[in-house]
Image (cartoon, rainbow, N blue to C red; front, side, top):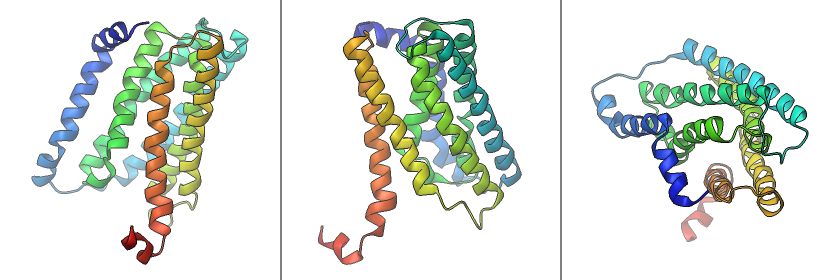
Length: 234
């Protein structure tokens, strides 16, 4: 599929309009925060995050069964189970936009980073594109792995919301898992591109995720741990 055709397809997706609205919400959020007070939302966050974790369990299970039924993670064909898994994944990506809504309502402006916005905005388009045009076992491998990581991720967020004074100690390991998934997906997409006719754009997208998550990891867990005199000398 050529670049122009890919771009035209994305522009006509229902999710493209949602993404534009999402970006406008993020851009206008400082105005809202100037005229409002931060909300706690703790009980809602506990329920929301655990629910997202549970939803990812079902999504991963359906992807796993669909790939097993298809017989190969490189097969560019769909099955009824895979089609349902892609639909559930698409719904999950819309629900997860509430992450940003809650950050805005709680005045957590610092958490709304470029990585956060890029990840959520791009994934709703990818989820719909995959559901409508490529609900294949080959694509299910990446989205299924992402669902598995989100089981852990939203469970972590749920624990943080439930016990804000004593959050889980494995934040660093959670980020390592997120980065590891993209390296695994990159290998899968590269092999698929080389030997099975995969689209090359998935490789580029995966590399952007590795770069952004890697940069976050360095800033959050490596650079911040270095002695102050070393930081000043750079």
